[in-house]
Structures are given as structure tokens and as C-alpha cells.
Length: 174
Image 1: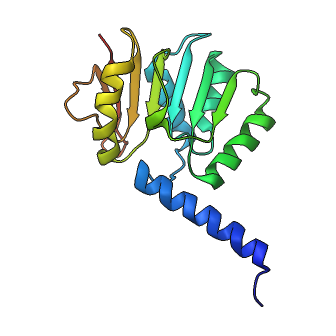
Image 2: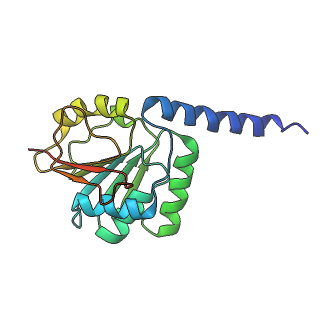
């Protein structure tokens, strides 16, 4: 049985935006809760600080940053399915006053008021992101990268508690 034209269009739109997100920065891979907690602990996030999650996926980092740490969190996502999942997560978590979700390409957005920037991107995207962050981020900002380092940057801390753990890198902007 064939799908109605509108359902086919929705499926194509979802797949196209997921492909675009994968090409632009990274495919969507949800982080385990324990790794989200480890990442935010490493960020040393304080109440009221602004956190940007670049390629925020389903909003796990955003909601935990707002709920547990009292952060003002902003997430950017270009893939439609994770964006919709993040929107649902934000609404059900009760953090919509302190979380902003943007359906935009983070490479074109200003990040100069960040206290913390988080990212789980491909090595190619991290290489492109490094120069943007170097220009825009204020001194004292922390950048926390899951799995892949920023080429040319020296991490302040690398968290890899076990040999099987995924490394998390924190950079302190001088």
C-alpha cells in the first residue's frame, strides 16, 4: 500500500533535513544520560549562565542544563526530527522559560554572549568551528566537546574515566 502524497512529502522532508544535518555538522546520535551528566559537570555550569548547544539533537543537554544547573540554554538544530523531539522534551520537562530552541545553522549564528558552548560534531565540523569560536567567544567561556577535539586547540581537561569511555574535552577561552 502506497503512502498518501503528503505522508511521502513528510518522510522526504525528514530524511532530507537529517542528511543536511549530517553533511553540515554531524548525524544525530543521542548521548547516553551518564555522558550528558559528565559533560555538564565538566562544563562547571553556574546558575544563570548562557549555554549554547551546537547541533542540540533531541535537547538532552539543554533540558538538563536548565533543570539541574539553572542555565539559560540555547540549542541550534537543522535536522527536523531531532528538532521536533527537542521541542517535545523541552515542553514536557517544564523548562521552556529558560531554554530557547532554534531551527538554524549554528555556523551563521553569533555566540559572543556564551559562558559555555557544547558540541558533539564530526572532526570536519570541529575543524570549521574552531576559528569561529576563537573569534567570537569571550574570555572565561568554556567549550566542551564530546568525542572529538578542536584541531589546533589545547584542552584544559580531558575526561575519559575508563578505557571504554568516550573522551570529553574542555577548553577554557583565555
